[in-house]
Length: 301
Ligand SMILES: *[C@@H]1O[C@H](CO)[C@@H](O)[C@H](O)[C@H]1NC(C)=O
Ligand SMILES: *[C@@H]1O[C@H](CO)[C@@H](O)[C@H](O)[C@H]1NC(C)=O
Ligand SMILES: *[C@@H]1O[C@H](CO)[C@@H](O)[C@H](O)[C@H]1NC(C)=O
Ligand SMILES: *[C@@H]1O[C@H](CO)[C@@H](O)[C@H](O)[C@H]1NC(C)=O
Ligand SMILES: *[C@@H]1O[C@H](CO)[C@@H](O)[C@H](O)[C@H]1NC(C)=O
Ligand SMILES: *[C@@H]1O[C@H](CO)[C@@H](O)[C@H](O)[C@H]1NC(C)=O
Image (cartoon, rainbow, N blue to C red; front, side, top):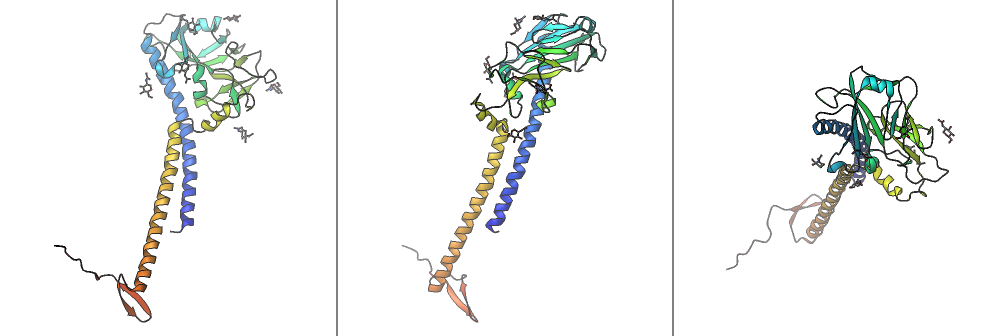
């Protein structure tokens, strides 16, 4: 096989593995979010077996999620509709209808804290606040959080999310923009703030504030953007490993071929000198006769 052909095959494989890694990354991201959600509901239900209605419970998620804050409350749906809820970063006004219609519901508050950029990022923007999330579930006698997610239908005023007190440094003229994340952290939606550090939310989900990415303002973010594509290290490992393997195979093939060539040339040279092989002639062609051993081994002693 010519070196050119090998080169072509390597290039194709590198391209394929690149797309494969992007796919795996996208998939594992969605997987990350789903498994976190599943873990969270299970964890809450285990920790708090008999929740009191209207009491806000802070839940600690354990070592793997240090820095993340979870608060859960069980409410009567009627009270939620008539009075709304104003707690922590979330202000739900009255006249927000939780669907489907159930007697009780659970509201989950998530503050991703310093884990925000692990789970979420916005290309070409820098997070200047933690990611805040809120989700509504049905709640029953048997479990704090049921498997059934609720839909919040806003009849009058919108839900607001308040970031003040949680906003990091940004230049005065660089006004943050509200971001809502879609499923698995993809499909971001941008919206202007309605008041300083206040975002309107027309549905449950995950929100934060961003500013357009500028290397001047946060120099260390540059490093982050390189690793962003590969923020699952094993994907990076996979790609590096794969490319390494291809290179290794290429090197081995090249070495073997070089060695063969050298051997062949040596044979030729030797046969010309008539040392290694007996030769015989067919017409004009001189052929080596390799079947015979020229020097018989001599036994010592
Ligand atoms: C829950 O956590 C919040 C924020 O860390 C804190 O302000 C609040 O006092 C905590 N509430 C309880 C009941 O521990
Ligand atoms: C934390 O993560 C490690 C490795 O991913 C896992 O083995 C361990 O079970 C996790 N612990 C908890 C409490 O989730
Ligand atoms: C987040 O902050 C907590 C302390 O608040 C720390 O223990 C944890 O290691 C931090 N996690 C990351 C990923 O920086
Ligand atoms: C919600 O609570 C905050 C304090 O936590 C308060 O400043 C604000 O006025 C309240 N909003 C409403 C609409 O009650
Ligand atoms: C980010 O910015 C770069 C350079 O300005 C541009 O090429 C790229 O398309 C942008 N990415 C997104 C997702 O907008
Ligand atoms: C958001 O605000 C900027 C100015 O700060 C303005 O140019 C832009 O049109 C606004 N976008 C929307 C969707 O209102």
